[in-house]
Image (cartoon, rainbow, N blue to C red):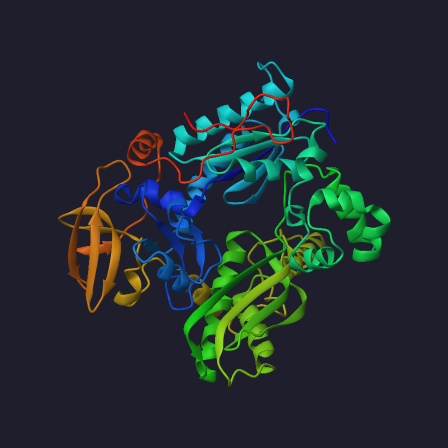
Length: 510
């Protein structure tokens, strides 16, 4: 544990929904839900205005529509979310070289490892000053709000940022941890999920303070050695995990949920082939390869199974991944109906089996060059290696994988006009899709820095209407978003968690 609260945790407020509100002036201050829009869609993020109606992440979209029928339901625009996240992460890296991203909208920062505290009064007040400055910088750069937690450990910093939501800052002074944790639910501690909480409940333990009082021996009896020791330490506020700058991905995967169960075997195979292509596209974009191919199949009754096959070496070849996925699918009975399919690659590496072969060939070529007097790569009588061109469909597979993500690929009109997506009209300019159906698409014409725009309806095949790239949020959006948004439904905590004699640290945006 540290002697000062110099670990910072940033959690952007309702990030996906907030980006949509900042991008669409007519939605500011109104309930917005981002996620899957089909009958089996799931909510990714709900704005605070939508949360008033009981809508929350991971809720089926159909249930959310019953709770908040007048909310705006939008498909996700991950490209824009990543771009905005990059801006926020750059601000974090300006504070310290030790930044540990957990997702697009969440990260830990070790303030002691950088120069962020220089020029401040140091200690807890200096850390608070850095946190407030960060929140102002994020609002200026993106028009969005984030909640900040400051403490002497990662666990406590994350708890503090949760207490600060939305749009606030909470600092937990070092030495006050146990008092702050005591009244909280056992589910507050990392690693204490529903099953562990139920075990503790049956033993009469419902709060973190009761965990601490139970003692380590009792926790070892209830939870086992490893888990018991960990939970006991966390209940006393002990968490020595460092902020890790690089978090290496363990796998790359894609999956789709289908509005109607897939029962046709041919259709299931075609979907697996398509998912394999998308997976390899992501794998190559990350500059990685993988050795283990995994498929995921969720049946009509929500039962889920996975199958995996480990290859002889890492690959980024779409044909190899596709064939492995289909072999795995051959052993799965899908006749009852499939609601979700996924394909992934794990055991990641920075090279492929072909890279190793090429290195061996180059070494042989250099040796041959010394013997014959020719330079490696010079024209000569050499023949292709034994594997050249012999991988079944290798070139074709690569082309197919690229085609999966091709921007200009033909897309059915009824799938192109997803609510929330950006469009451009030859006469009316830029806007976004409000909805579509029965051959019509409704568009609201506005941009992030404009006033709320007008709505017009077109035929789905109108030649003057086309898809467009999102407009990046900028500094000009910040003031407009603040002027057009009402106060949050839930105000941040206006106290220092655990610090009875400390001055208030919960604040709202200026």
